[in-house]
Amino acid sequence: MALILSLETSTKVCSVAIHKDGNLLSVYEFRVERSHSKLITQSISFLMEGLDLKMTDLDAIAVSKGPGSYTGLRIGVSTAKGLCYALDKPLIAVDTLAAIARKVNKFNFKNSLVCPMIDARRLEVYCALYNKENEIISPVSAVILNESSFNGFFSSSEIIFLGDGAGKFAPLVAGNSKAIFLQNENPSAEYVGIIAEEKYLDNQFEDVAYFEPFYLKDFISTGSTQN
Image 1 (tube, rainbow, N blue to C red):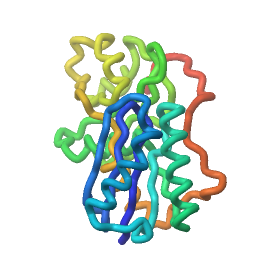
Image 2: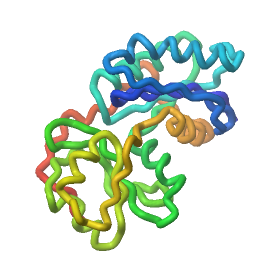
Image 3: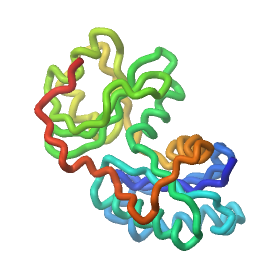
Image 4: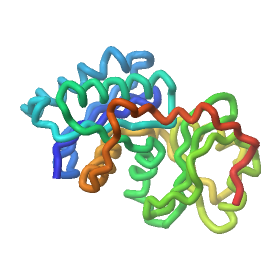
């Protein structure tokens, strides 16, 4: 069991959370563009002081590793690594899309597939498919969306789309009753922390010196995701 500080900076929404033994103690979120580097350290101090905790009380630092915004990820990872060095604490990296899926699956009572989407550029998104048990069905990839994207999966399941890239796909599948879109569901440090607790118990730590964000910059998409 552990006291873990989690950071999520992969999109325009930035959040910080503190969990103890996997239970959320506090979370703070802000949606001010181009402010991650200015506000993240203030947010950490705000949460720690509000809970009457010292930084040395922490057992680990967790960070959303990507994919996502290049600048946002760089800020989050550099902040997490700096804290790990200063406090001599382990670093835990959590897949951004897995954290979004975990948030939705908490309320996924119809056993739908879940497809978190992070905006890339034009009609491109970073996405993956997860089942109700949070198992990955289609790996993280960069996809250029079109009308036939995910057709193979629609044949057998309803799919819940969410994240800041999902709005690009909605007009392409208008009328498809198996395509469900959730609004205003973004990555959150709250769910980064839940996954981080599991990784902590399994001793899944990163090498602080060499860890880098998962930018997914070199992936070349050829079209739709089908199965």
